[in-house]
Structure formats: structure tokens, C-alpha cells
Length: 552
Image (tube, rainbow, N blue to C red; front, side):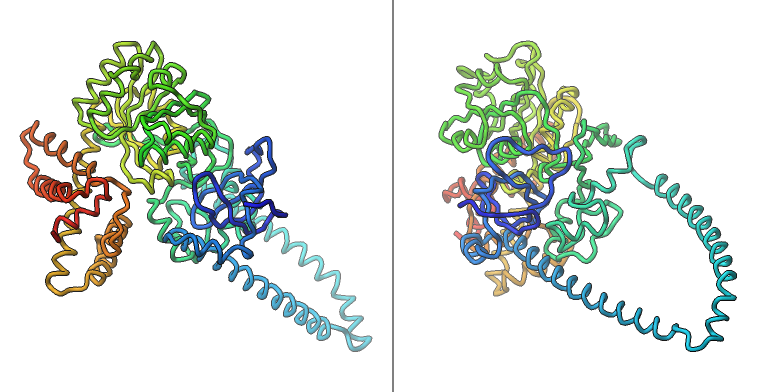
């Protein structure tokens, strides 16, 4: 993008890394967020998401001048929601200006009228006014004292109630409440000057979303009401919720990568595997300021991340030996074992104190074996498979299921916040693998049922679109349901979660059930449908391509 003359408050199109141009607004950065060195850049808050970043000036274009051009080249649903949010912001800003203008004129007329009526018309009235002036002043003074006293008393009670009800930890400065708004102003009114002015900024869990753009309201709900944004530079203060099962969920006060307020760990991070999930994870780690060294079996996939600031590792062993914590995300148990035990593998780089985090979805036996060999060399091990898809990975909204070394889990907190919205610690090694397989078993079975329902609607002469509309108005409504049905209706099976991988997870989940003599008939039936789809050459398509198993 060509360099342009811009200033604070301008609406722009911003290009961030490998993402498409996105509408945003130039705003003041948080006080504790330093400006990058080098080329001139602006701090941009993007519409339709909670994302914000420093963007180089040559990666910015004025919003209005390039609106038509950008709309032509971007057709995604979230992109359209972002554009709708901009237009709503502009309409509200225009309406607010008109309202302010009318209000000022009306106030002026009322003041003039009031002055005209109250002007004395005779000497007697002037004398009466003079005689009563002292009395009035005295009464007003007494009234002020009463009002001030009452207000202070009520204010004290309100403050006490707020402190009792507030979930904030003891000792946290109340300034954070201001930091929940757009950082252009410390007042509530200042929120309307930010890029999210078309709607309220992220509400607290107890505060409903009101007067919001309906698309963005839906988007907020889809985020399962993440904790509010905190713009302070913080040492990670975690909310730890113990469940009856003994598992632990950790969410930081600033929650996720899309909030952009994470203080990255000073540890050197390695990442092995740049597939659909790994690519989004690494991008968010870099965006949040982590120092990352990458490796991929197909080296060309590393190029984009090198351009974004990552370092290149020649082998898995080299990455592990030069980094403090190395993450890996590969396709299946065989790939996970080969990565660790193969030539120039992870194990050759492990020495006392080195940390390895396996994010692959594998079976409990595989992850237990890997943990044993890593620990036998003096290393520390954590399993951390992720629930989500490519889009959630790109958005930094994955759910992380972790088990193993609890201290390592806490050391990874800034990384987990960059890549996900929530992380769960599930205890000993193997628990996360089991839980992940169960989650994907449910998801895979549900996808097969969706495909079965749509084909049954078709063969019985019912509208598939109407079926989707009905489902979207009922208890099954979800982003997953809507996206997968849209894939089927549009015949678009570009992979967001490979069909071959969901079939692999179903197979492993069935084996998990067999190991404990627990029946899994629904998963077994769904697995057969996915095997049929694979036989129809759908392995590398999205899981929604299981639909094709029903129509052939």
C-alpha cells in the first residue's frame, strides 16, 4: 500500500501481516505500549474484532477513498460485519453531531426566553429582589450542605456495594475500570470516539450488550463473554477456577491475542509444524511480541513467518537446543513420534531444563511415551492439544487443554493467551489427550448428523436453506452449525478442519472406548461415514465434505 497523509481519528484500511486489509480507526495507543522502532506507524483499532496493532504507514489507506476497492476483493462474512460496523459508526456519529447542534440551539433559546421572563419590569420588583437576595443565599448555602452531605453518604454506600460486588482481586487499582474503554479518553463519553463507537465496548460478564450493532452483538456472544480488556502492562495475574474434577481453568485478565494487551514472556519460543492450526498460532505469538523460532517439514511454509520476524530453525533438534520452550503441532501419533524420536529430532536437542509442549491431537499412550523420553533426558513436558479450527487459530480464539508439568503450564501463560481464549489444566499426562478425543468425537458425530439431515431434507423435497434457518432459530444454533451448513449449501469445502483428521480422531476415540470397555456406537457409525467420504477422495477437504458420502 502506498504511503498517505494520516492523523489521529482517521478511518483507514490497515494491512497486518498475511491478513487482508481491514477497516479500522487510528487511535491513541495505551500509555504502556511502546511504539516500534524504525518506520513511521500508527496505532489502529480494527472494527468487527477486538484487535489492534501498530501498522506501518505504507500499509494504511484512507477508508472512504478505497472502500469500493476493498469491498470488491473481500467477500467474507466477518469482513462484511466489520464494514457494517464502520457504516453504523458513521451514522451514529452524524446523528450525534446533529443532536448536539439542535440541543445547543434549543438551550440557547431557552436561556434567552428565561432571561426575558425574569427581567424586572419596575423599581418595586428590583427592591423586592434586593431584599430577598440575602435570604435566598442563606437558604441555598444550607441546601448545599445538606445535598453535599447526602451525596457523600450515598456515594460512600454505592462505592462500598461496588467493592463488595466487584470480582477484582484485592489491591488492584481502580484505574483498570477506565482502561476497559477505548484508550482515547478516560471518560465514558470517550468511548464514542473509538473505533468501536457503533456499539458498546466489551461488557463485563454481568453487563448485557445494549445498543449494539446486531452482527457484533452476535460476535461477542460467540466469544463466550471473555474477560474485559486490560491495557496495563501486567505481570500475569491468573484467575484459577478449581472444579470438582480437580481440573483447572486459567484465563488471564487480558484473556486473548485479539485484545493485544499481552506482556510476552522473555523466554525464547520454538514452534514445530506450520499446518492449518500451527500457522495461526505462530502468527499470533509473533503479533503479541514473542521471540519465535520456526521449523516445518516443508521449509517454504516458514518464509512468511520469517518476513514477520520469526527466526528459522534448520532441524527440530536445533530449535529445541536454542529455545527455552518448544511447541509442536503435527497431524497424528506417527508424526508426533517421528518428530521427537527421528533423525535430528526433538530428543536430540533436549537437555536439563529444556521444555517441550506437544499440541498435537493424539492418543494418551503416544503422549505418555513422549513425556517419558523427554523427562528421562532432564526435560520438562506438557501436552496441550487445542480445540478449534483454522479460523479460530487465526483469530487467537482456540481452547487449550493441557496436562503434565504444572509449572511449565504456568510458564506458557502468555503464549496460551496469545493463541487462545481459554486454557484448562487437566492434571497428569494423558488426560488432555483423552479429553481432546472426546471433544472431537462429539464434534465429528454432530457434523455427520448435520450432513445426514441436509441430505434427508433434499430427498424428501424440503428446502435445505429453510432447514438451516429453522435450526439457527432453535437450541442447536451455533457458529459451527451455520458455517458448516453454509459450506454444504455453497459447495465450498475449503479445509478449515481436515476431514482426514476428524476421522482420525473418531478412530482414536473409539479405541479409547474399547480400552475401557465403553460402547461408542454413535461415534462408530459416524466414523464409517467419514471413511466413505475418504474413499471418495475427500480427505483433504473440510470435514463438512462428509456430506458427499450421502449423495454418492
